[in-house]
Length: 87
Image 1 (cartoon, rainbow, N blue to C red):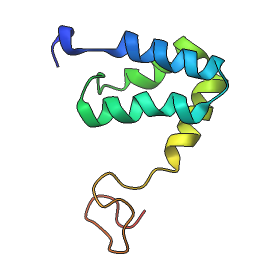
Image 2 (cartoon, rainbow, N blue to C red; image 1 turned 60 degrees about the horizontal axis):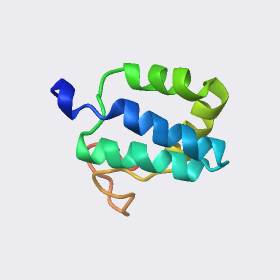
Image 3 (tube, rainbow, N blue to C red; image 1 turned 180 degrees about the vertical axis):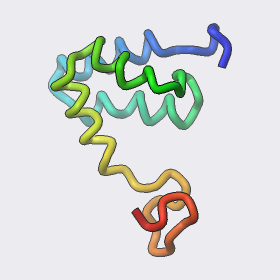
């Protein structure tokens, strides 16, 4: 991804505002959209950036919210896909 396409700072600010408003569900939404649309860097630094922006406690809360998501390939359907193997 080129530098101009990286919306990480804007996304982290949106997440911080949602956390301050008390909603991990709303804070997880920009991460879902960025992951689907490629607006955020996909390197291992994403979680570290999140921790630095909002703290370990809140980052863990958002990650717990995201952990409940179904597989992005099969949507948690009855059939096991090759990516998540039903997980």
